[in-house]
Length: 60
Image (cartoon, rainbow, N blue to C red):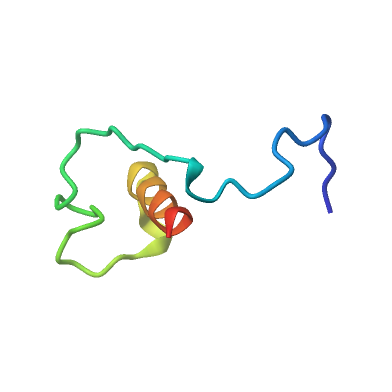
């Protein structure tokens, strides 16, 4: 369980009013990239790849 130090800023769902923009310019299809043809190994993902996956899943 956790507690927030301050009151919530947003108390209603934002729906389509939010945009997550990832402006990273590294190649997505390189080794361990999101679009690499190799299978993803979640225990060995670099931070940029796991961050992109997180943004994609959150945005869906």
